[in-house]
Image (cartoon, rainbow, N blue to C red; front, side, top):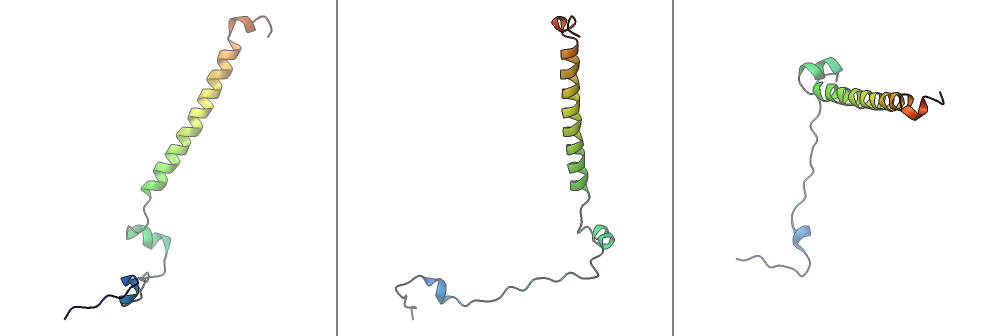
Length: 79
């Protein structure tokens, strides 16, 4: 026997069920999370290295600009 369709969409015809969240085991210690690989350290290291590189690049660029302006030939008379 075929199931008859109503005029509206079929989303309300399906039974609903609740999704249960998985609870964390243990006390939630940062050391336990690190040792069980739930907390990854590598992304933090990469992020720190990236931002240190950005800051270093900005400082190096600013120092090159300052040195170039100070050593510019027409500026020697004014300094």
